[in-house]
View 1: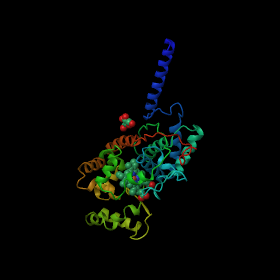
View 2: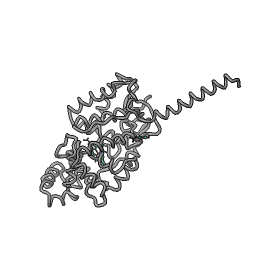
View 3: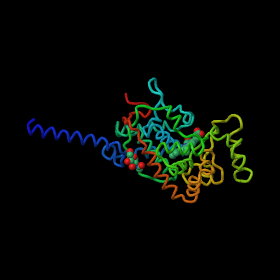
Length: 331
Ligand code: HEM
Ligand SMILES: *[C@@H]1O[C@H](CO)[C@@H](O)[C@H](O)[C@H]1NC(C)=O
């Protein structure tokens, strides 16, 4: 090889090498990912969210939960948004999601706006992460900066959705295990469960607590709970009505605050999984955290923000694409 050729070869090697390491850097999320390609991305999401939450605050809860269910299955990759097709089995029929997840039409609306302003640029996974932050802010919760740069998956996993998403009848050990498998600590879990300060749950998810579980006991000594129990019984009859809904934070159902933790201390947690974090005798750490967030809303807001960034940082190592429609992989 002549010296010039050698030099050229060397240069090419350097260019190749640095583009490879750049690609690796790209898998890390950053705050300025869309700064050049879609500077108004956050503004576009925010406008649609403002409209939707103003119309119905439940929309905030729906979007926040979608982001959680997205990140717990294959990482935050928009997999939760995929519809079933002939060739793809989506996650929408997972036991915790079927007849339960809401907000897909709102996601479509936001995606349409993003596509008309910045075609093929902003991933559905990032859309959800930004919209979840806006949802929280719009109902009175904390603001945090949302790192972006996620890619949308070309696959979904009904099996993982069934296996990994926590359920309301689980005990503390099972819950802690599911979170730790995602790299989230007990502190993250207790703070993130504070999301239940907004939104609704269906009778099917707490009926056992009313008719045979904890509420029967607490009502003996807690007059406030007795009243609450009466209300729950009227919403959820012993037989039927499984899809009737009631707020998880009955004090301030549409406000993102720390009243949810106060209700756990009273024994009025609607979901067994939430009550476990305070009541179970092995839960030293989680009990203390519940007490802390119940008296210190600022500590709760700070931890919730940090834990949401950690939740949103769960990646799908397979990478992916930027979907044009959040419901289908690109043709
Ligand atoms: C700790 C484990 C968790 C369990 C066992 C759990 C379980 C549930 C259940 C059973 C419901 C009611 C669904 C229905 O009845 O249809 C619900 C609703 C909700 N969850 Fe969780 N969840 C957990 C953690 C989280 C996390 C980490 C977030 C978000 C950061 C979240 C956000 C929500 C929201 C906002 C709703 C209300 C949705 C609506 O109103 O449509 N949850 N959750
Ligand atoms: C996000 O994940 C990357 C690894 O993929 C890690 O280096 C970084 O520290 C994480 N950031 C947060 C806030 O957890």
